[in-house]
Length: 546
Image 1 (cartoon, rainbow, N blue to C red):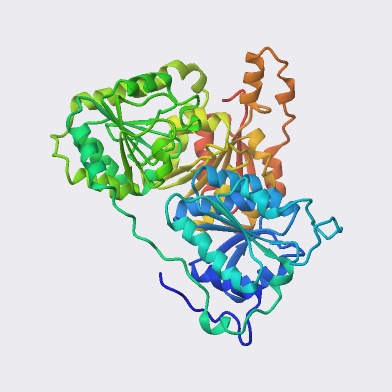
Image 2 (cartoon, one colour):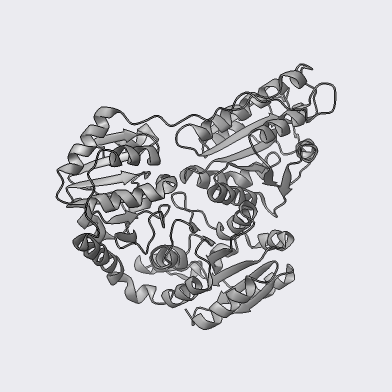
């Protein structure tokens, strides 16, 4: 996209809020998530004048998670608006989560005035230190502007950051006195700068040749997919078939290759048995993954005798395991470069398919007794939900032990899971963001009772949308994973216990619906009904049932 022009302001010089709104609209933003506050009211006025809608959440953390999920589903950056001080700190956890999962999330807030004294003055929402520096600890880009003219430039830098290489969270702070201040009158004529849409550079020919040589000479191969491979689903499936290579994914890579595909071993990189198998492959191709502790669920182990890595971030070629053939490019371009130089392979490869089935068994066998509580309910959900449904999950046992390995998906569907940073309370507000991103797809939130109560107030936001939203909650009376870890250490686990309120009744109090589901059949019936009912429907599965 080239330089843009805008006429959001009727006449005269543009204010800071006008420039912000014009810049957002010029970059394709049509909706934001956030809460009006004393210092950001000019921003909301500018958004309204520019025709940019806003979903008002009950808490800034919820706004951040909703904007994160919006970006994951529609592929465009999510934008969250907060006010200064405590509101910004409220959204910091969500910004950290988006940055960890390489999600383009833009947070915009007012800051202290330009002439604000360095010493404490008692100004409303005043922080002891710098908001910009605080957000720099959780965001990949953190900027504070010092003039109206810089607002458009900062926006272009943020969207340029999203568009070149590996994205993450970005923060822009605008001094509160600039929001109503008039800038240079030439702004009306010159418009606002717009970040270009760069074409991904191809991987170097020598690196591609090295990767092809390794793959041609390999007796055994495997593929590991992370979230960065999502836009290359068809190409990754083709590569697996050409190589006769079973496919293992991280949590964020779930469903990129259909989990019904005979070469798919599903979300299995965390399995010790699968890790041992990967270590023995001649070549492993890792696409769009950090290969980090959060992917392995322990310290990373070696993948293959040789490693081919495809990643848009050059730094990933040296993190964890150094690549023997580093292809620095986006996933689709990199896989296509390999496919162009690899010979076709007869299909189907019965041996590779049998290996993939064996990997699933190796992944599941040690945990069958533990996972048995969730699997029947997840099967019931799969029967009710459309193939392209979006499921949002939480850092809850029913999600990482249950849905990640046992709720099959294809590339048309999505499971949005907070990996890496591992925040709680993601599922419900993320579901609201997913609903905003796509008006046609079914959306379901999956959580535990502990995680849901981090952001349970967003049931009110869900009710405001008027869209059907089943919220399925496995109630184990507290923080079940922490309780188990405490018991393993010989500690008293009672601090992890919670007195769980009537979650169904809370949903009804917010104008939604609520019920319990004692059996998988009950769950299927309740979710089927919820998908046809406006607003949130909390379906609680009691501990004794699960």
